[in-house]
Image (tube, rainbow, N blue to C red):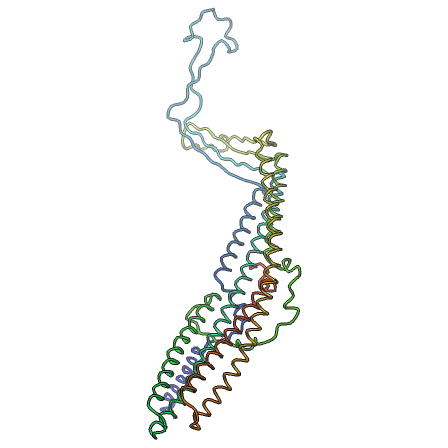
Length: 467
């Protein structure tokens, strides 16, 4: 028993390894919603705009620091080589008496050097902003800028969701095309095999076999091309999701699952859908920022009031080392208020206020244009949904007819009353009808995605601030 355990263990490990390898190759299943959720968490574009939001938050903290106490410290040391010289008028000294007129300056003025060789000081300053209208309004503007950054994050999330949705359905269409070609190729292989058997029995000519072989080879070539497009479609989807390209995934939905008639509510061509769009929120926040900027410039006319205090200790010593330290340090302190106001700035603030008012008028004009453009986009997208659905219905009917024509042609050929040219033509018509149906269905799905985007139905998934 002991000798047989290692081979059994090895077999179990190999089985587990094979199962893991099989799962890795098949990839994790992803629905459309799961792809969008993954993309919101991992998209590089979303991460970049989140970095911008974090930077805005740090800038707010930096701006807040202006209103907090400002404390600085200083220390200094000086060593005189030559002391500065001062002139002393001896006539001003008490007890000097009355000096005779015309006394030469060399006698009247004496020279003296004051100070000691070593000087040191240590101290600090503290100041506190008591009033500054522009600061407090600017603080509101800084917070509004963070809100604008958050809206920009949400807009990028919506754009990412739209791009992932389109890439997801593109990958599904390529998969369906690959499956169609696989089915048609298998059917052509069976027909070729039966025709070769008939050729050996002398019931058909060699040209019939060659025609089928040519068609079989064309189908193989087309199948290989579509399979490469499937791989590329998956890569595009993973790129939009922010997923490593070499990671394997499978898609759980099918493009044919979206084969449904649009409802009347979906095709409404009027309404205030611009209010649902994230772009409107961005422009509204831009107006709010400009209004705060105007208020900040006006508040700056009232000046600022700052309280301050300076505290220091100084020492002067004739020698570098002084044992009696307590008697040679002298305190110095100063406290006060400082009020600063601009009397005339060359009308700069007035110009800034007027600039802000023009910016507001410009954004409001853009909002009116955006409302009209959304109405136009809504009508265009609704019309595309109707037109593409008409194409789907027609392509579906042609696909059913193509299947019936192919069935009749192959039946006649097997019974010896039809030609293989008729079969090849029916097979080509069927494949074209099937591919046209998929293309029409894909266009219809994309039209619905565009309509959903225009109506503002794509919503950001992460609206809370990241810790």
